[in-house]
Length: 128
Image 1 (tube, rainbow, N blue to C red):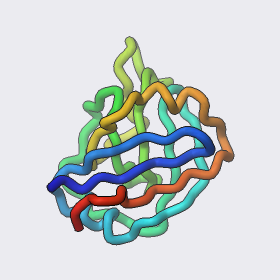
Image 2: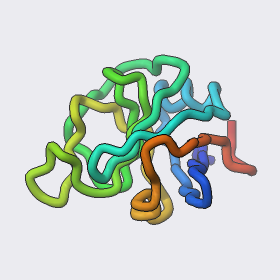
Image 3: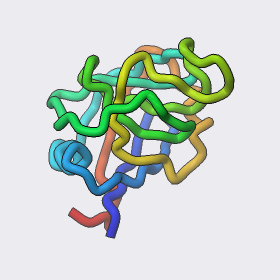
């Protein structure tokens, strides 16, 4: 069974299905995590207290991707174009590692603001 986590920011909540990779497993073991949200176009990102293994860095992301940004030791969630975008497709500031994808509507993050508190938690009934 896939590992699933929930992102909570105030009354905003989204579910993520993690990929079966070492970086996702490392994040899973560190949960729960709380941090502070930053907005960059239609991306939220927030620092995490541990570095994740690097492998498979890419600049090719889609709306709904849940990624690790090694340069900022942060999680990045894409819900639309970023300042680096030339169209509606998000483009990260620098290479990221895809950890999973949202199984709920990414547009819920439009309500989030810089400074909001974010929590990542394991979903009830998820394996691990």
